[in-house]
Image 1 (cartoon, rainbow, N blue to C red):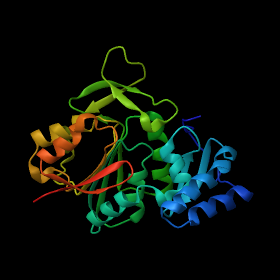
Image 2: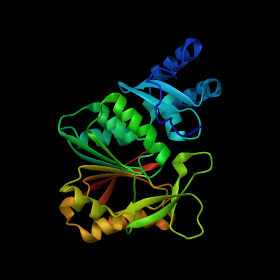
Image 3: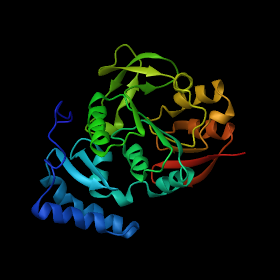
Length: 275
């Protein structure tokens, strides 16, 4: 079951107990590092099979309800939060150390938005975009449970133009959901708008950091931003998934608009806008 109930029980109803709780605490206590990560991957296997479809877990000082199956991002947050995009989070923390505006595009379960919100730095504004209705429902539950009022969730996709498109579900992994504008596409119909239009409506005049992960469609969001808005509106720090960058289209777009690769995670490039 991927959809959270309309009136779900309070957080704690799906919390592991007994040996499962002890095993989870052990996983969370492991130090970071490549060797420890390999150990964590091995240790989590028996626990993955023992947990139910929903798991209540404490991560980063937050009380979260996450899917035990059907979304790799949520599984990583349940079992191995200390290993989850550590380099990317460090760069974002530096960019937002005094507060600022953060965009999470392709929020999925809201891992990045939740983490930035968990830091509770005064003056931080978080805009999260996720068109999947099921993911939005569970993210709203987690935001409400933790009182994260700084996170504004938008149940819409971003792209090259506005209108309605089809959201095609990833096969067994909601992190692989993708937008398909073709008439024959099978899935859920969702709203889509452009980033410049959103910025104009919201009155946002700067973006200090942005994470974008939309399964290879990143240029469809960023090209209108670069073409239609002043440079002062472009994100100063940009974390982009690069594993789907066929033909280096994204890398070329970023280089042509003044971004320089400053770091590399397992799946993402960390780019900084040059003066």
